[in-house]
Length: 330
Image (cartoon, rainbow, N blue to C red; front, side, top):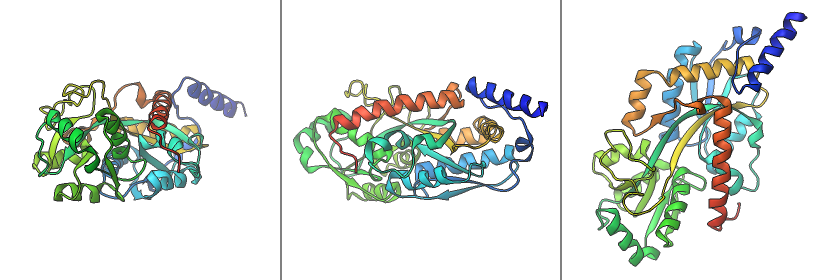
């Protein structure tokens, strides 16, 4: 009994310090079978690509297959609810992006609460890019701003659905341009990207993960990256930020985090966090992410406490942005 009490106390101290520590038989046994990593968006999109990279890298540490499953719908809320209701045993995890922080402001009924999830660490952070159809007349942001001012009501802005990163970025862009554009929601990133390359829609603010290959292939026009500083990634380094190109103060990045159902044993959470940390140091993963304009996280946000603090700040910031945009929860 004394040994069990000591182990419990050690876990409690670790959680209080904002970290996870492994102790007890659960850590010795987990994982005994494949782990499912739920992506709440369609296959082929930026979140799916990132999740598959992380799953492969985490497999090396966990010693078990990490299977990626796409449970798309309702801006990522269906897949999130699936994980929130899953058994808290470490075998069902979630990779979600910035949309997890904005969902409470966009939806009246979510089917879950943020408190239903355990924070495991931030995975990466990346700018988006403002891109246009190949035949759009402007070639640079100053010309695009003038074009939007003259044709704003006639232009459309594609996104991957309400609550998606492209939708959120679109809200910021519309405010920055001070001109209303028609929002065109799609069921995922792939069909939206296909239509902008084909000239069916005018503009899109898309995650670098998905837009970088199209920019390099000159299948779309690139007007700027959305982060405060230029991307250090070679493929995007020559593209100016929207801030330096005239949209003063514009700063939008897409981040992904890893989550587990609330109540998952601390020792299991510790193993998952350890596997995530090892994955984000994997040279192959880093190379793949950087090639897509994405930077892996290596700071305190990789800790559960740091991840949670960052998340809460983002949720507060976006609550105001969405409210100011006049968007009512659906």
